[in-house]
Image 1: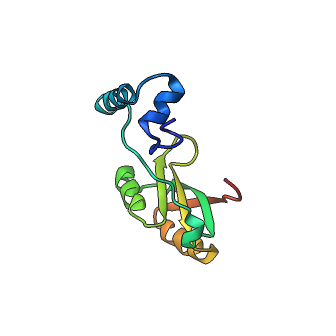
Image 2: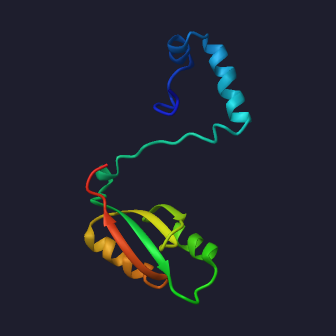
Length: 126
């Protein structure tokens, strides 16, 4: 239930699972202490903030370019990047990016070209 709504009251969760609110609170605190619950996040409506284009971008790094971790850090620091993962397969890195429009995406891809060749898949629907 917390994965669906991290702000759900312990009383409501307790009612749903047949435990008291204090018992739920104790269990949640234990999950936090054990590192099972690592944190809480919020969801943002990016469209209301002017994001029109979302895309997955994979990158094959240039031959001879070393320091994949350094490249990952540089890409993760870009404001458009929502996530950046090192992956297996033909590609080295997969980026999820949010862009104001297609022109913004093109400018981002031009910045990415310094690291290698990209392949872009625009997200049509989530």
